[in-house]
Length: 102
Image (cartoon, rainbow, N blue to C red; front, side, top):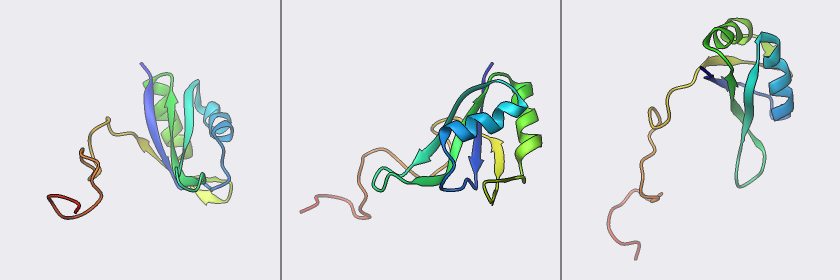
């Protein structure tokens, strides 16, 4: 079963293709995506890599966590399931107050 990894510390110049190429050294990569800022179109410095098996994901964590890529030190760990962690909640409001905007 595929296992998703969270990769932090990416250089702003690291591309999806570069991420896939590098993590391919640890096994079969199902997907690789650098998270981009929707306003600026620039990398946010982190991404996700999905390895084909749990064994390959373990190998990738051991091989790349703490290693340098494109001049930056990577932090590689197993991704948390969607909906966990983070402080975002539904509703779409960015303000701190409650009630009407007006």
